[in-house]
Image (cartoon, rainbow, N blue to C red; front, side, top):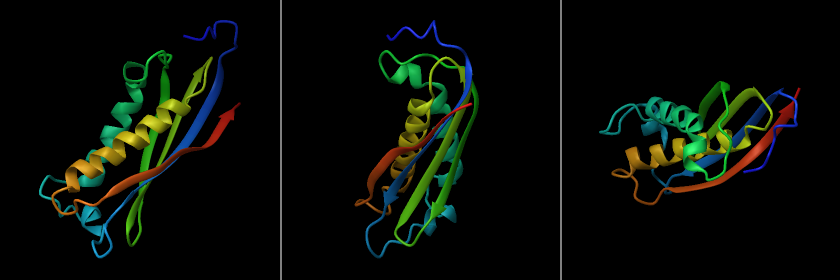
Length: 135
């Protein structure tokens, strides 16, 4: 694990994004309308993403435990995809990009899991950090 003990605590923020693409002809708005048998897809995915961000250090080897100040997960529904946007913030000695990425990944996996009965051809992708800020 990298020694960050010499670094000053700073406000740090990271944003990440990813997508869940649906098969052509399968409208992802079913997820928004909660028409999946397993329940309210986007609410469950949001909670899953937040919980995952809080547990990043347990999922990624050698990742620092961080006291998160906030985690946000939001969605945009397009014609053939659900876009996921996350933001994680902390006041710490190291960045929160892994927490933002884990939140996106687990939110996408949750959408996939909850909707797989209606679309077996979904594709998760484009997961990336879009912004890192030190203040």
